[in-house]
Image 1 (cartoon, rainbow, N blue to C red):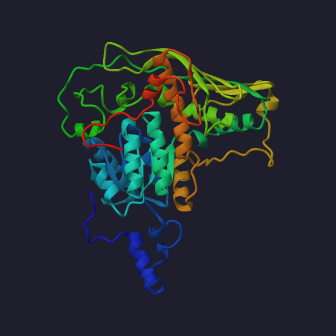
Image 2: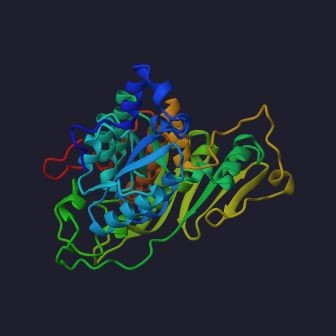
Image 3: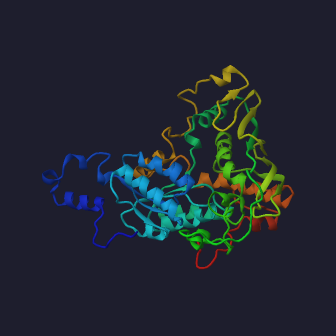
Amino acid sequence: MKPPAERTPRRRFLQSVIAAGAAPAFLPSHLFGEGAPSNRIAVGFIGVGGHGNGWNLPSYLKQPDARVLAVCDVDDSHLRTAKRNVDIAYGNEDCATTKDFREVLDRDDIDAVMISTPDHWHTLMSVLAVRAGKDVQCEKPTLTIDEGKILIDEVRKHGRVFQTSTEDRAVPQYHRMAELVRNGRIGELQRIEVILPKQPGGPGDPTPQPVPEGLDYDMWLGPAPEAPYCKDRVHFNFRWISDYSGGIIPDWGAHLFDTAQWANDTERSGPVEVEGTGTRWEGGLYDTAKDYDVTFRYAGGVVMTCKPGTPSIKFIGSEGWVGNRGWRAEVEASSSEILESTIGDDEVKLFTEPAGEHRNFLDCVKSREEPYFPVDIGHRVATLCHLANIAIDRGVKLEWDPGAEVFPADDEANRMREVRPMRGAWKL
């Protein structure tokens, strides 16, 4: 909740004391150094469901220079669990709770927010956060291509640090593959084969049900169209409904497509052509793609394919290949020479942070440098996912201009990249 007006944030209090010249006489030594209250980054958590509470929150609670002050979620059970975990970690009962993320953004003692909500909230919450002066780490991806363009503009306009939240660039296997390809170990890159999972489960039950006690369902919907509550709509299942997400391709493509773009040296650009086929779920609640076969072509001649199966990636070049079979699986190559190759000091060294996305974000909040997965690179990866879905729906080969970020010759495809109308008073 918003703190009382008389409360003075610890950082501001310490600065005022030091300015008055009282620090040497009255402040104990533990108030100085990296873990001192004045140097801790105060963080608010928006969305503490499965991934928010199971992955992001534990990572932040381990950071000595971060302090989680508030948690926000529309579900009471999520809030209770997150608050308990924060209070246990800090040995107190100070963690504030709210169901309205705007109360987190209103707090002047919070420096940054970690957003772990469904996709349809990502851009709107992030934009409101940077306008409120917060640095932002937000889960991937955006909901449409043009949403991502707006997000870039707002982050740059307000001078905030933004981390697109995935761990891949800190995963040694993916970093290693990208460096091998970028340094020519497989010769000239010709083809990238990406395999993503199939959507799990069935078509979803659309039968309307009473909203459970403790769930603010109207806030869960937020900017999305009005729709009756049913259990297969909310929480993790949002991924399979196009009002809230793009399905399995944006979910997993935001990971493996990033490694592909990284290795291809197109992380701030994209393909020039895309075509795809696939089928969507029908007859139930879910309507995103369940089967898909997509091909991207880049200006340099590289072709990337995307099909369902065991999550994997393979780079094929004129002098060999490198890849893996399975999520985070060991790197394989066409020869031991490639596999055991050493990247020299004078070669391309790709920026990473072995300690992960959360550590990298906190470091960049302090340095004001860009994190390893900044807003524009995250947008380009999300764009690949959206291009795949648009190509499947259009059923024709599409030209894409990665500079202007438009389809030069397809009005219908261009309408599919636009920001969608938002419900009620919500707007970008």
